[in-house]
Length: 134
Image (cartoon, rainbow, N blue to C red; front, side):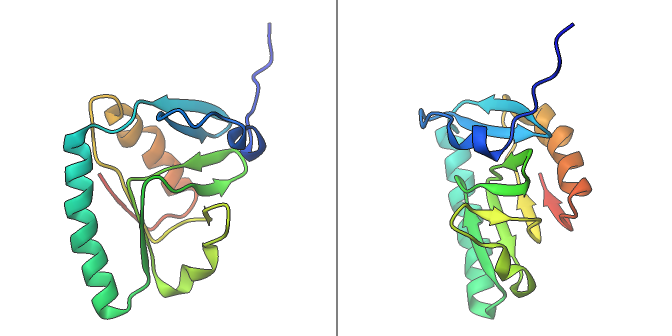
């Protein structure tokens, strides 16, 4: 019987930049294809709305994929959109966002629906992300 290999941020950094989206969910590698044009159009529109509101009110910062959200050393995700309120501004580092954002947004696609509604929802909840939009 083989032991489960738990991947960390160190292994994550070594993954290739090949257009696919790599994440690590509690030590396990998750790979999805690059987003579709429809997905990107939805993200662009959503980012314009959320970013405009946040900027106008000086309510924090908005980031969109690809950006690493490092929930811990064995859980690294790339939500489609991330909002940080001013109290979480210190989470931004050279590696990405290190800790729980105020809001994580995932745009559903056929290749991510089960993960977004299951695994990632649980990850965000466990790591204290207050708001999760699907």
